[in-house]
Length: 113
Length: 114
Image (tube, rainbow over all chains, first blue to last red; front, top):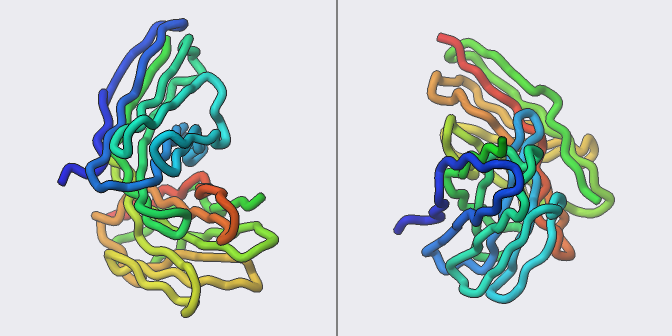
C-alpha cells in the first residue's frame, strides 16, 4: 500500500516552460487536493476534486489546471511557468469530505528560474 | 469564510518541558478543527481532530488539544516534549456544512532543545 505518490520530487523549470506534476493514490479515495506551501505562509489550496470527472478551484488556482479522469490520478498542470510558482507542492487525498483525515504525498519541490 | 490564526511562528522549548501551541479560528458557523504535523522533508500527518463531543481531544505521540468555543481556540499541548517532536505544526479549520475544504494556518515551528 503506497498511499499517495507524487512525482517528480524535484524539478527546475525555466520561465515559460510547462510541466505536469503527477499524483496517484491507491486507497480508493474519492477526494483529492493540490496544495502549495511557501515558507511562513502555510498551505494554500490550488484545486480539489470530489470524484472522477469533478474538479473545483481552491484559493490560488491561477496559472494551474487539473483533470481527474480516474479515481486514482489527479495531475496538476503548470502552463507558462513563472517565478511566483516556485514552491513545494503537496497532493493529498481523503475517503470522504471535510471531517476526514487527509493523507499527504511527500511533495514536489519546484523552482522556476 | 472561516480562517485560522496560529499565534506563534516559532516556539523553542527544552527537552522534557511542557509546550502549548496556540490556534484561534474565526467562523460564524460550527467548525471541525484539526492539527497536522510536518517533519522535515515530509508531507503532513494528522495529529488529532475535533468533530463534536468531548472538548478535550487526544492524539498521537502524546499530544492533546482542547476546543474552547467561547474563546474560539484549539490549542495543542504536550506535557513533556522530546527531540523527535521537532517539526512544524499546522492548525486547520473547516465548516461542517457546505463543501468548503480545509483552511490551514501558517504553521508553528517547534524546536526542542537538548
